[in-house]
Image 1 (cartoon, rainbow, N blue to C red):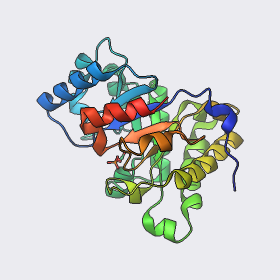
Image 2: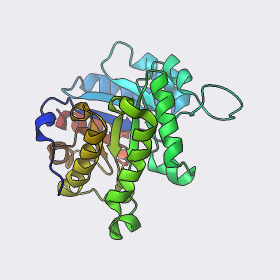
Image 3: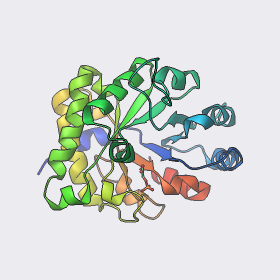
Length: 256
Ligand code: PGA
């Protein structure tokens, strides 16, 4: 059993990030963001990760507000013949603060390897974006007792690639079996994995106590507070519920 870092929890400001995935429209986004602006600000830091084509609109909608924004993926390269890809430099130009790296949907549907995810995180940092590196096991891996091995392997590639800069990333633990399924990891299950990740980060960086580790996977208004109360859970990465202003605002309120 890995001990939790209860000392650091008090000084870490929590972060709640909406992952819109491939959803929205210009009109729907404007409505959602106006409702969020009206509902905030919150004690926790809040951000939304939008499809890249909407980033200019999102930047306009959130001008002067405390809600930050980001993208859902970036290229590991700065520029060149990479049809369809978007670079971290481009995202930075649109005021992004965050970019997701290695969401399980990209690992699964775009065959993103641990090393590619690490290279994307590195490209993001080079352009002063904060990568939110996603890790998580599938149901089969959990049932085979491989959860710890899988998430450590995924995080280890990022630690090796970034070196001491690892302290600048946000990590998100998202069990694949909990994403979009309505099945949330129990607070104890989530905390156990977060503690494993925290201790792995501790071994890599003296600043690991200040790093944020988010939980993602069917976070809703009715389970957010108990998840966010765990000592190594520093906020959430929210998919489905981030598309509904009232739900997302309630989740943001549950964080501290
Ligand atoms: P969910 O998605 O909240 O809809 O489960 C979380 C995510 O995939 O980031």
